[in-house]
Amino acid sequence: MPFLGTIVNFFVVLIAGTAGSLIKKSVPKRIGDAIMNGMAICVIYIGIDGILEAAPPVSSDSFLSAGLVKVLVMILSMMLGTLIGEIIDIDKWLCKLGEILEARLVRGEEGKGNFARGFVSCSLLFCVGAMAVNGAINDSMGEPDLLLAKSVIDGISCFIMATSLGFGCAFSAFFLLVYQGAISLVGIGLLEILPAATLTYMSVTGSLVIILVGTNVLGATKVKTANMIPTIFMPIAVAPLLELIL
Image (cartoon, rainbow, N blue to C red; front, side, top):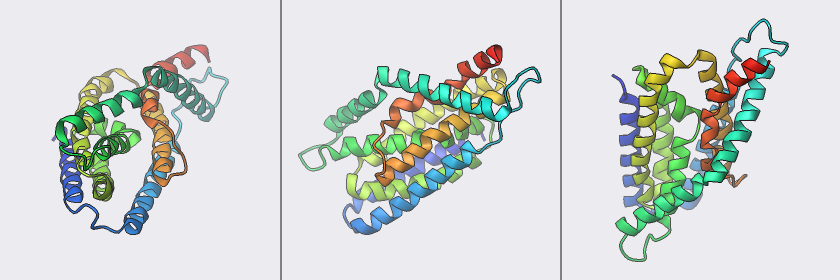
């Protein structure tokens, strides 16, 4: 069933976020922090595992190895994608969206600020990275396994985050539904157009971003990963350009 993974992912995040917001503050902070650190380590592992994906073969005419071409695609994609993301400032617009939703949905002073923070934090955590992009593309082919695994991590993370940040975390499920659903729809066309090598480059580049999502959750970095979303799609242009040059 196409889109099954995204549908399951949506309901898991919505239910987990709602449950977490209803029992807000009942989970001790030290326990919540410990579980989130564990989830962050799992996210970092998923990112590292994605980076280690085998490099696609290159033309016999190329004087560079397949591994080096993969690294070049990642570097150029990160540079160009981050530049585009910073110019657009996706993080700012996503924060504004959270603030608009907060103004419409939150009544009274209690919860002000936390709604937007929870919505933005969870939207980034659940939507940026190889699992969301690759999972959504696979889901369009009727292969939901990756998104089903992602749903488990997302659900636990959303529940814990919602106990401190409230209902904004649950509302990120709607952003996830639109984002992954759109990628699945696009993926149906991309699978017919893009070579397998380009899809691999998209996966490994997205894996770099997902590592930063994990380190952000750990508090080791404070990177605006939303502004890196375009990097995931840069290999569509970078890979064929490098193939022509090299």
